[in-house]
Length: 124
Image 1 (spheres, one colour):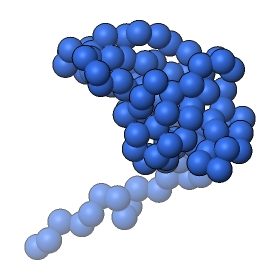
Image 2 (cartoon, rainbow, N blue to C red):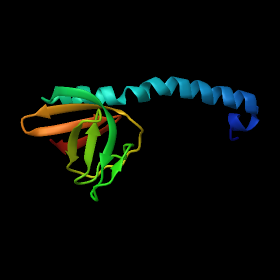
Image 3 (cartoon, one colour):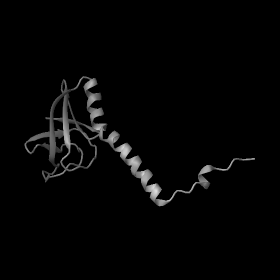
Image 4 (cartoon, rainbow, N blue to C red):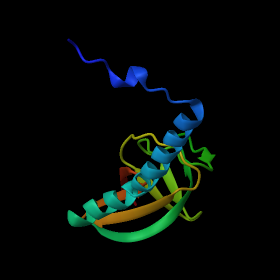
């Protein structure tokens, strides 16, 4: 005789489902928020040193058009930090955010920028 699945007989109403989803979202949010810190720490563990922290205030695309958001990196895009400094992207990696925080790290001639949970190769 085959055992009956328990889930088929378990009735969960909509309010209970909402509560479970909210509880899980609240539990997962702090872990997701720490991803950037873990990335920075792993780069530091691999010999990188933090040279600065700034807010990404926009970028200038390949056509010279200035944008006031952050859409990741594309080859040659100039990322604007705190309205005055610029770093140039050396790779393509898409991510969208409005005025995110960035951490810039260096090891020898290698320069990296961490925004959220993405690491970008950049040059100054």
